[in-house]
Amino acid sequence: MGARLAGWRNARGVTQLALARRVPVSRTTIAGVETGRQCPDRVFWQRCESALEAGGELLAGYDDYRRLKQQLDQERVDAAQRARWGEVEDRMPSPGAFGVPAGEAERPLGDVGAVDGADGWGGLRDRRVTR
Image 1 (cartoon, rainbow, N blue to C red):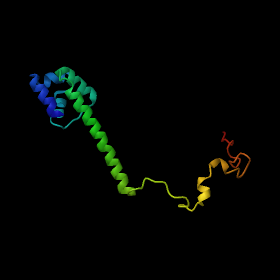
Image 2: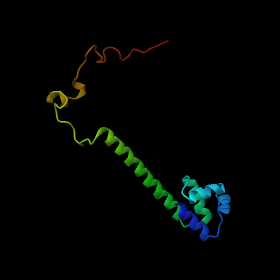
Image 3: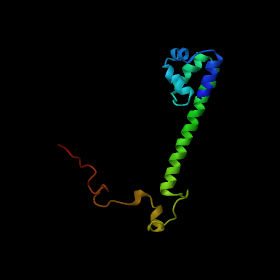
Image 4: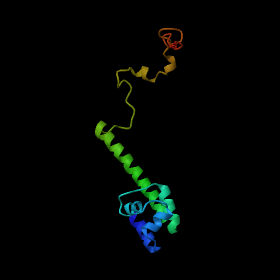
């Protein structure tokens, strides 16, 4: 991205200082972006795009960069989870796998019935703490 910015800036005969004044940012910000030390937000790239009349190349490049970065970040999260938990199969456990009889696993929750009171919540549902 920085090389593209420098290329467009040089092709237009614009100095770093002149571009910085048009964007507006400091000249060191332009230098930092061109050398890859900084990666500013999309507004910066929109302003550079406009100032250099780059035909959409700078903004498209930034958008591509952001998509790739988000993909990489997600892959890192996924890899960290795999490292912590190992590979997990994408299937439901078989009935009885957790010590629950097969018939009980499929029974809807509504069939459970009241346990400690008529409301099924042990009489605790409507109790509120007041001061």
